Image 1 (cartoon, one colour):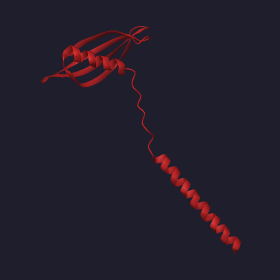
Image 2 (cartoon, one colour; image 1 turned 90 degrees about the vertical axis):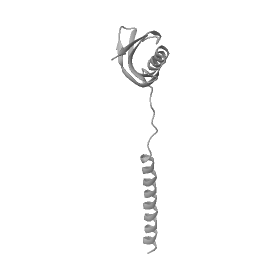
Image 3 (tube, one colour; image 1 turned 45 degrees about the vertical axis):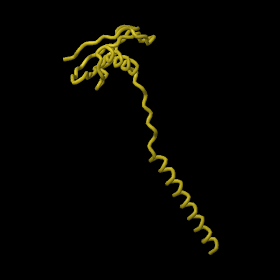
Image 4 (tube, one colour; image 1 turned 60 degrees about the horizontal axis):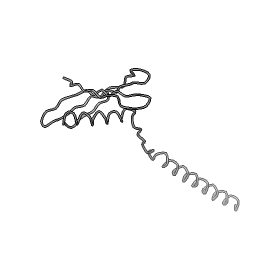
Length: 116
């Protein structure tokens, strides 16, 4: 009888220990992992496009869209952006093309065109 009682206690201790381990490990898996957001490769050129457009048009940027990157040669590339600008009560859209040396990341030119 003493042996049977001892094994029941051991079983309960083992089962409760396993339940505690399972519960604590499930909390770890249910906790969301921190989100890490990488900065896109065009971010530097987008910031330049916004700054130059604000200076040129004297307007604020209401919306911003990255159109895409085009490789012009082995060393030159361009990023295109579409910006919704607002000056006083008028809104207008412009396209900004930023050309740069893709090997050295040096700015080559910034061109603007209004979009109808």
